Picture (cartoon, rainbow, N blue to C red):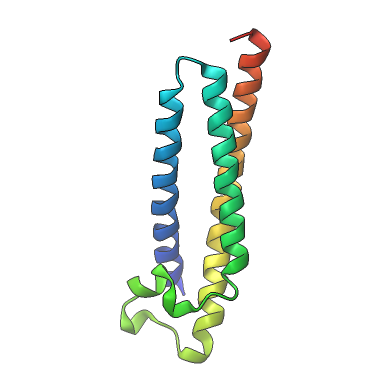
Length: 122
């Protein structure tokens, strides 16, 4: 189960890393207007959190053999077929929700910075 958690963490971390890179690039492109950049970053990061929550909801019914985590597991690391769907869904759901929590904290921070820029008139 710990191998499944590690691999799920790595795959979701990689996906969130790529999404964060895209959000960062958009924010850099808008850096001439800091309030707008942080509003865009806050909005896109909020959307990423919503997508992670939806992925967590869908993890319960997604076929475990079609997940990226399952493909990275070695044959000897995979749980027995009767237990695999439940274990895979549980691990992926927990991982998605953990990343959704972290992402929502970052989104809140970006919205607060955007509000501060709005208050000082930038």
